[in-house]
Amino acid sequence: MGICTAELTLSSILFMQDNSYFCFMHRFIPFVAILLCSFAPHKFYVSKTMVEFNPRSQGFEVTCKFFTDDLEVVISKMNGSSLKLGEGEVPKADQLIESHIQSHFKMWFDDQLIVMRFVGKEVEGDMTYCYLEFFRSPQFHALKIENSCLMEDFPDQQNIVDVKAEGTTSTVILSASKNTDVIFR
Image (tube, rainbow, N blue to C red; front, side, top):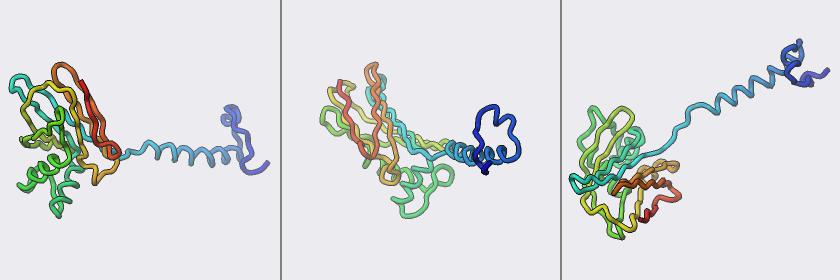
């Protein structure tokens, strides 16, 4: 019998002898190694933005949620040197984040570009929450959303945007191949 010619059935696996066992293990171990490697953690690039109308303030509150390390890469590139967010960050960090968001996240309500005000940010472990606001009526016929945040540095980036107003929630998922979408009412 050749080195790896044994037929692998359940009974042959259970009662393998010398050469058959070697053949089985020779094929089984690489298969298991490949299988385990396929479950190794892979880096994914995603952000979540919530745009919600607040009836008490009669304005929209915007929360952009980013992975802190991805945001650090982007603002470090803008700064020309490495920056860390959280403890010991440079005062310029908020300005860089605001600039990036204002350049890459835009909304048009019925063809009118909205100007958002950057309120601030919070760093909580591996997540950074950025807050913006704008004031306008929640009624619209078409809302165009552009969100290319982080996409220049991370081509696989996906930006999920939820818009909540007047009892309904609409969601768009934007990527480098489609960084703009329109919600109709």
